[in-house]
Image (cartoon, rainbow, N blue to C red; front, side, top):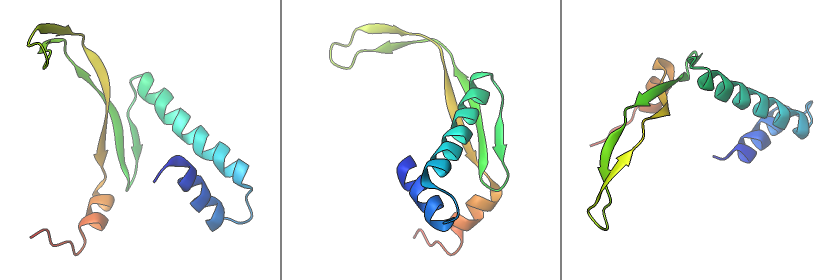
Length: 97
């Protein structure tokens, strides 16, 4: 699902809201999650999951085409861990065998 589909589904489920208002709400929520992660904060949505930032240290990589060693800078990467309720709903009755 992409953001426009999410906005569309929320607007359909809430006919009393204009689609442009739903889009503004979704954008505000996502912008605040990004801003919180940029500050180094953790964002937890109960039943859904938690977003956090993990640091990857600098390392020496390898160019797969030439085999030459390349220095890769350290970076911060987003990390998502699902909540218990989401995991239970996803795995309810799932037979992976």
